[in-house]
Amino acid sequence: MDHLKARPSLSYADVLQTHKTLFEAVFPWAGEDRHTNASHIFVGKGSVIFAHPNDIRKAIDYALEKGQDKAFMAEKPGEVMGYLAYGHPFLDGNGRAIMLIHAELARRAHIGIDWVATDKDQYLAALTQELEEPGKGKLDAYLKPFIRKGSEMKDIADAIKAAPGLDGGNADTVAGETSNPTIKAQYEAQEVKRKGGQGAAQKDE
Image 1: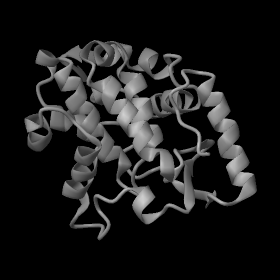
Image 2: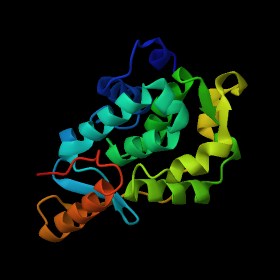
Image 3: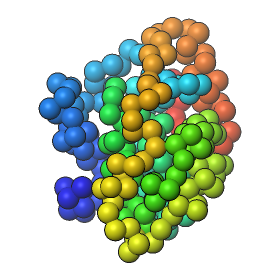
């Protein structure tokens, strides 16, 4: 968190470094994204297939661009979280890495999320809706009662530790090979639905 706070602006490299710092004692590939070490597979959770490995950086860069617009972040932290989650850069450890990035973006926008007060099932349901139809305010609506002014957030680290979905439950699954026509069709259908929301997600060509 100190490293992120000291950065003048956050970039994709900072997302990779955050993951490496958290997990280099656990994973030999810590800090490597799926494009680097798993470019041939789709990863999913429930009904959602995460970004194609080729499009991870596009999704994360978009999230960082919108998240570093302080007015946008203060108004739509759920939408920013949705794009960070959709990018899903890593094979494991996405929740923790993304929560740290999101918390720093929130701090810069002078807000915080009282994750302790959120409900895991309700949050994950809203996040799934956000992933399926970005930009329609599903996650923003859920998070709105839990937004606090930055000065009200006494311990950001403890708040992040209490965030939903960080207990290892509801693990990701390998949805299939990127070359599999059936899985590719499912992904493309999902992208059409997502683009009906805001249109910022990028389709693999």
